[in-house]
Each structure stands twice: as structure tokens, then as C-alpha cells.
Length: 501
Image (cartoon, rainbow, N blue to C red; front, side, top):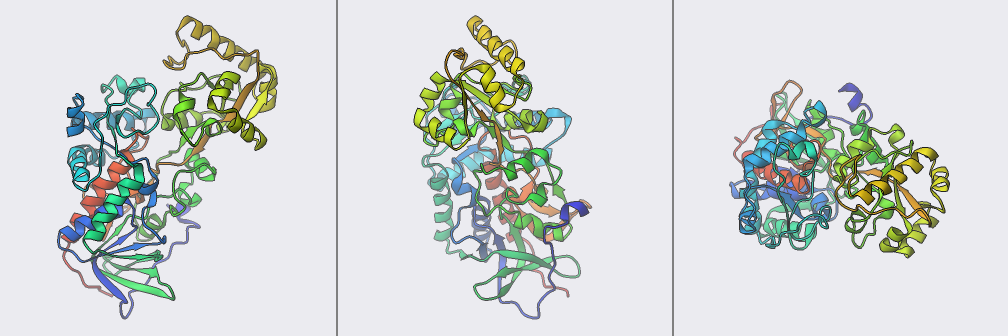
């Protein structure tokens, strides 16, 4: 822990002689989890104040695709999908045990699974629309489209042998912008006070280690804000904080990558503040991986994922089933020497993706073009013989209709080696951080001795343990909603406490 904390700028603040402001519950961060916490705390009778360091609310939720992952919902039943929270939990646990290391807290995963149907209906009650459309696979295996889809690790063989794959990603109309707009409207309808451009910098605890407030940056000076009942940390994850990813190979690489789908505000502020009070840390390696250079922003993942392509390592050998989810791509890329993976396509695929885009990215050195397999191998620095054997075997396998190496099912078409070939790096990027402070099922922050820190709660990506390896698209937002609501409800029911200096 000492190595982790070194360099993250942690400090503690003494109790002031007087407070500048006060509220029953102070929520740090106005994203999805923060909005839910504020709504539930207010509805339970608490006076609530939200602090947001950015000039506008939204956080990661506003930038997401607007999906929540759950089973046993009314939408599934309407579309003929038989499922249940118990099946979802079994799936979570199968994923969490992958690789022999338990990457999720079973108790937290249980709560997320069990609350799924209820939270889905709660979202509908806020006016969030989930169309009754079932998207089959392939074709929509990786891209979010309004309705119900299977966009995760459901089809990974090890998990599918434990739990039957089901469509569990519930996508709303309007993606994350519309999803968060409904949450924001619910906050505004209640008249909950929000302060923007006011980053929280440090928690304040008394001699009994009871959290009784915090320090935030005001427009002209620091503000000492008292929390009469509790502080809830929902300040996002660690995606731009290298110190919090120490020892996590894939997460560190993702932080270094320019390819991110999370906001710049995710600098681990809430995590750092909690660690200063002795909070325990749930550190699980993560990240996602994809051939970003071949992906057109207009259609994101769909087009490239339906095309023939091979992913190869430095030896020129395929190292993964190219159809698996981005999080599983990251796991297998993480096993390769120097984290090097290349995606290779032919000229027909390049034309499908768009030659203008391809040429532009060749000019930017994001894509490499060569006239032969041997020339491509030399240009990207992989073993020539390995790449030639790999592509020859791929073409032989697809001619027979069977991928004997990785049992890939879609995009089984030959790569044309008579014309130009193209390659781009398969890169790690951060989209769904899973590392944060430890919490219990009440959303209370847990210290290194396993005890709740009085008056301190956390939810969203500030907290960890709800999942490790990413189960499916929508789990991040669902866990934010579930534990945001739990944190708000429980914080509001705390007894009012008085600082003991």
C-alpha cells in the first residue's frame, strides 16, 4: 500500500474552527452513480449537496453507450428471453474466476445481479426508453444498438459451458446522453443543490475517524463543507492516474494510450481521498483492446468486426479468437511479448472500411500497407515465416469452413494475398475501469482491516469489486446505478454526527 500511495498527493485536513457550508449528505461527483446517490438520499429525507469538479455534469455515464446489463427483466420476457438474476450471478462468477484469480467480490456481484430487474424498471420510471427490439448475433455482437443484445463475454467457451448465453445488454434510445439527461432531470426536479467547478480535495475526519466533511476548491478560496451524516464518493475512476495503476500491466498500458472513451475528469480523486483515511484498495488489471486504426468513427466496431482479419503477435502467429469481446482481447494481448498485437486485412476489407480513411491513417502512420505478406512482415517487425504460415493456414481453414486454431465462427473468408495487405496495432485502451476502493454491500468504504469507515460511502468507478474481467456491455453502468442508489439510501439514514476534534 505504501508503494501505491507514493506520489499520488495524499493529505489529510484538520477540522476547521468553522464550516463554510453544510448538508446532511455530500455527494462528490455528478455522473451516473452520483445522480442516483443524490436522488435516493433526497427521497429518504436528507438535505443533499453535489460537488462536481467539471463545469457540467455527466462523467463517464454521459459518454457511454447507454446500456445496462441485467437478467430477468420485463423487456427480456417481452422478447421471449427466459433469464433470471440467479443466472446472471452464475455468469458473473464464471467470468470472475477466469484465469484462477477471483477478480470480483461475490457479495457485490450478487447485489448487482439481484437488483438488475428492479433498477431496470426504475430507469423506465425516469423516462428512459428501451425499445423492444432483439438484435441477433453476429452483426450486432459488438456495437450498441437500442434494444436488447448480446454484447459481452457470453459466448466465450469457458463461460458458455457454465451458463447459457443470453441477451442481457439493455440499450436505451439516445445512448449515454439521453440516459444521463433523465438522471439529471430527476436531480433537478428535486431541487438538489449542485456546485460545478468545485473539485473536492480532501476528506475531513475527527479523532474517532468519523468522516465529517471535506475541503473543496471554491472560486476564490478553499471551502470547508460539513457532512452531517455522510460523504458519498462518486468521482469516477483512475483512467488518467498512472500511480493508481502501479503493477497492473494492461491498465497501465491503457492509461498511457491516447485511445480512451472516458472523460479527462477520471483522475482517481475520490480513490485518493479515501486511501488517505486508510481505505482498502481493489486493484484488478483491466483495459480493452481493439484495432483502433481500422475502426471508422461513424460505425465504430460493427464493420471491422464482420470482416475477415487475423490478429498476430511478434511471431506472426494468431494469439486469440478475433471475435471475442474487447475485454478478452485485452487479456490475450496482455500475454503477448511486449504487448504487441497486429490486425491484418486485405485490400477488399480496406475498401469496405473506406479507402479515404485508410489512406489518411497510412499518412498518419497508424496503418501500414505492403504489397506482399513478406513485405508486410518486415514493415511491422513480425516473423516473416510465421506470418506467411498463419495467413496460408487461415485461407486453408476458411476454404474448409472450420477455424481449427481458435474455432472462430464469423468472418470466415480468405485474405487475398495477391494485392496490398494492411496492418494496424491492436491497442489497449481504457473504457471501463474496475479498480477502486473496497466497499461492502451497503456501499460503505472499507479500511485495510476490513472495517467500514464511519460516514464514508462510495459507488461507481470510485469503488471496486463489482466486476473484474468485464462480463458484458452495461455492467459498469448497472453497478453504478445499483450502488449509487444503495449509497444514497443508507447515507441518508445515518445518525447526524458531531465532529470530535
